Amino acid sequence: MSEVVIAADAEEAGALAAGIIGRLVQDDPAAVLGVATGSTPLPLYRALATLGLDFRGVTAFALDEYVGLPPGHAESYRQVIEREVVGPLGLDPTRVHVPNGDPEELAHAGSDYEAAIALAGGVDVQILGIGTDGHIGFNEPGSSLASPTRVKTLTPETRADNARFFDSIDDVPMHCVTQGIGTILRARHLILLAFGEAKASALAAAVEGPVTASVPASAIQLHPRVTVIVDEAAAAQLERADYYRYVFANRPAWQQL
Ligand code: F6R
Image (tube, rainbow, N blue to C red; front, top):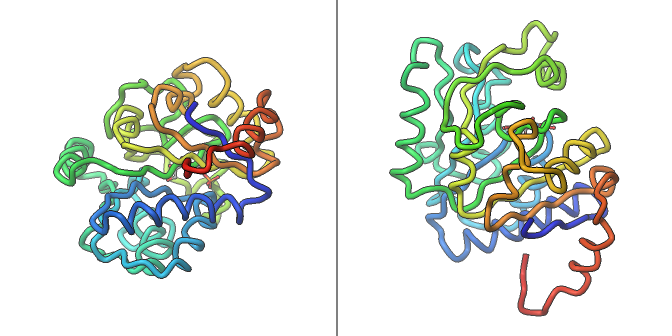
């Protein structure tokens, strides 16, 4: 694992992650970001919006999209990304990509998305959350660690977790199009965020357990550059928490996150 940072809370974690992304965009105004949806990255997006950076040249790729939500549905990830990322940061909407969840287009949705990422030169920094079942993107347990963007079936656990965004669990789509684990691992830097005690067990398995398709997030251990930023509650089951704090407290002056 490249680095695990235990922040006091989600706000501090969001600010730390925003610092990394802010420096990237300052150095490269045409950077390519991989953006996650869900609750976890919201403090990061809020912190990024306060930095006063120009995001108009930045390209963004969402991790995933539900299959079959009507265009414009408030909980489609296209809409969530527009609301939480594109608007607040001032991205150019024509540079923002979300997998195509139209049921009529699924045969080529994955390969089209892979081609678009390749055409953009790959993702510089990929923001990740983690599911309580250990997923990243919507790569549910059992997903191939080399998987490309494709259609997946959401687990009952993920549908229950995400029911809070819908009127009822029955409204949570059964299927999604998600970047694969192989796709995610091709990004040049991964930032995984996790907040709250509900994530503690999945996070510990991902960071300190064996690399296994049963915990898709454990695939990040195969990546050369990962920054895991969590709050105290999510860190509660990390065996080496004290060591991560010690490393952070004693980081060399030249080493930025
Ligand atoms: C979102 C995504 C998912 C979420 C995960 C955690 O684009 O791909 O992996 O990051 O389900 O969701 P939250 O942040 O809502 O707890």
